[in-house]
Length: 125
Image (cartoon, rainbow, N blue to C red):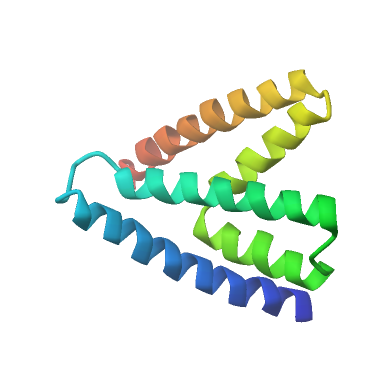
C-alpha cells in the first residue's frame, strides 16, 4: 500500500505539472493548432528520465522509494512517453537492437491503431 501511495502522490504532481507546462507552451505559441505543448512535455520528460536514469545507474543516488516516486509517479504522470523513450534506449544500449526497433514499431502502430479503433467503436454507442 505504501508503494501505491508513493506512486500516486508522484503521479498527481506529474499530471498537474504536465497540465501547467503544456498549457503554458500552448499560450506562449498563441494557441497554435499543432500540439507543441505535448511535444514540449514529451521532450522534457525524456530528458529528465534520461538524466535521472543516468544518475541512478552511475551513482546509485536513488532509493527504491525515490525511484518509484520520480520515475513511475512524477515522470509517469508527466508523460509516459519518457518511459517509452528510456526503455527503448536501454534496449538499444544493451545490444537488443531488434527489440528496440520492435518496441518503437509496436508502440506507434498499435497505439495509433488503438486510438482509431476506440474512435470507431465510440461512433456505434
